[in-house]
Amino acid sequence: MSMDRQRRRISRRDFLRGVGAGLAVTGLAACAPVATPPAGEAGSAAESAPAAAAPTTLKIIQWSHFVPAYDEWFDGEFTKQWGAENNTEVIVDHIAFSELLARASAEVAAQSGHDLFGFISPPSAFEPEVIDHADVIEEAENRFGQMHPLARASTYNPKTNKWFGFSDNWVPDPIHWRTDLWEQAEPGSTPDTWEDILRVGRKLKEMGHPLGIGISPDIDSNMALRALMYSYGSSVQDEDANVVINSPETVEAVKMGVALFQEAMEPEVLAWDASSNNRFLLSGRGSLILNAISALRTAEKDDPELARNIGLWSAPAGPVRRIGLEHVMGVYAIWNFSENVEGAKKFLLDLTADYRTAFIKSEFYNFPSFPETVPDLADLVAEDPKADPPDKYAILATAQDWATNVGYPGVASPAIGEVFDTFIIPNMFALAARGEMTPEEAVAWAEGEIVPIFEKWRQQGFI
Image (cartoon, rainbow, N blue to C red; front, side, top):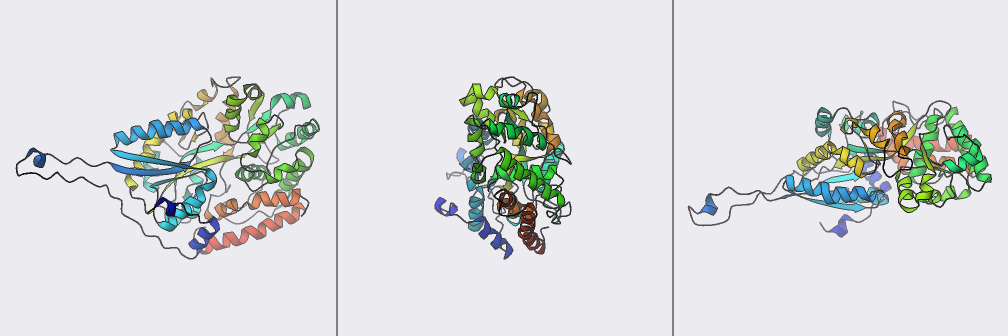
């Protein structure tokens, strides 16, 4: 199969239609080629010597990590050592995170591609196209202890009893805030609650340093606005996959989103992409964003003086709870048509076994989906040599207590995945923020968009 064919683009919507029509999948048996003995005369040493196994191949595709040091370690050290120890040529391809879904759809259409596909969100819509990862997850839990609940909810479908992926990591989504600006605006203030953020945010905007919470069709907005909803007691679904978004709690969350937009932010947040909030903070103008720590790591490298004035805080509390989303959900999936299923499984187990190194090489970005693999995580984040002060990242040790999955309080089903990928939640907030609808109307609009998606996947037996 040529790379050109592999790279042809198929939209997520087209793929979903294909699944809905009952896309047939043909599984290919995995096999490892074995070299034949060299020809020679009877009784020759070559003929009598045992044949050496030819190297197998393991093909991996994943995003270009936001912390370059991780890719340098993964590509240059871990995979090379693993390949040498397992008589395997490991080929790693990197693409932009925004291209992952289109590339995955193309590989499914071609029934050819990589053995391991690395997603950064739950690949639940691809469930029919992947193996059941139950055995490798069972082995991982036997070796490394229980998987984190948010990783479990992002890889397991209780309706079909199938594990559609293997999560090695998840990424916290803490607040980044300008401690110096907040102190000027209101001495002693912190972004502990959404009410605190709105109150101080009004003053910060007057100072020329507005907040930066996206209300646009991008991954950061998807996460931040769900955190706001969840903290108000709102959600897209309940534990049993019933659509419950049209509730007083959602209306109140949207009202808070509108207030934040109108009183503490600028119109630009309506058109942001996934890197806009990073640029906003690094410009020196922004006073607060919700983002993975790659934003602060970039500041440490590019503008150490600015970095000294950027603090981290946990997800803000709302009227009901303190809760936030994972920023990135790392999930590897093994296709049904993978040519090296067993090698892919072993690779995942060995990567998990070395996750303390992965955590350090990612500069604390990749949190382990199997927490016991980094038993000294709290000690590591409390004493970082690159941070000023060294305990700046200590707050991350609490992330396992307040972070949850997309789809909370249920699981990340294919229906939740489609709602996420079509940006219905950011669009709901944007309709109210722009004044095109009242909060109540915007919530009703979202319900009208979400219900048919759930009905479609329910009819197909996936929820």
